[in-house]
Every structure is written in C-alpha cells, then in structure tokens.
Amino acid sequence: MFARAFLLFLVLPGIFAGLLPWMLAFIDPWRRTGWSFGFPVIGCGLIILLWCLRDFFVSGKGTGSPWDPPKHLVVVGLYRFTRNPMYIGVLLVVGGWAIVAGSPLIGAYLIPLAVVLHLRIIFKEEPWMSRQFGQDWARYSERAPRWFPRTARR
Image (cartoon, helix red, strand yellow):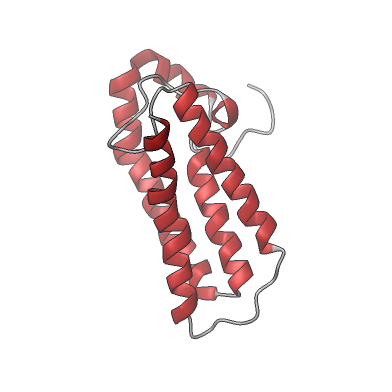
C-alpha cells in the first residue's frame, strides 16, 4: 500500500503542482527573473503533502487518491486544523514555483486550480465523505473548517 500512496504523491500533485507549472514557465511570455525565496514556499508545500500522505497511509489505511480512498476518516495531523491541507500544500507548491520562475502565468494558473479544487471538494469529496463516514464526518466537518484554520477555539 505504501507504493500506491507514494505513486499518488508522484502522479496527482506531480502533474498539477510540478509538470504543469514547469510547462507554463516555458511558454510564459511575461516571465521575468524569479526569486529564490519561492523555494521555502515550495518546501512548505512539499512538507504538507508528505505529512498528509503519511496521515492517509497510517491513520486512514488508504491514500488520498480517488481510486484508493482511505478506509478510516483522517482527523489527525494537519487535518485537525483544516479539512483540506493536502490541497493547501499543492497550492503552496504552485505559488512557490510562480515566485521561483518569475512567472505571472503560473501565478494566474493558481486561480482556476483553486476554484477547481474547491468545486471538487464541495460537489464530490464532501458528499462522498458524508456517505462513507456518516456522523463521524458530520462532527468532524463542524469542528474543522474547509480551508482556513480558525484562530480561536470553538
């Protein structure tokens, strides 16, 4: 199962946060000199992705992929603070690449990517989670916000 989880990490985030931004950087006519402070942003995103991968594997007994979803609701690690830390990690990696490459096109790609992820969450993932995990999901979704961690305890 670890091989499947690692394949997920290479394939899905690899395409949307690695390959596509790299291709966009090459075709970006507005590209300028990038800044190295984008590398820590990429690093934070990768750490978040790896942490989430571990939590899906260890706590969820599955992966974050649609073809091998977790068997248990994952509410540990970064999932204690927000329901979608893996997507936050992807968006950080893409934003970091935009900074490193000096590419407004990669920066602009962040907007439709975030919208598509948000719509996927609302119309596909959350209804599935509700059907799959029932009351556990209902309690968890009340406690953990969809995107931004709360600053004060409820």
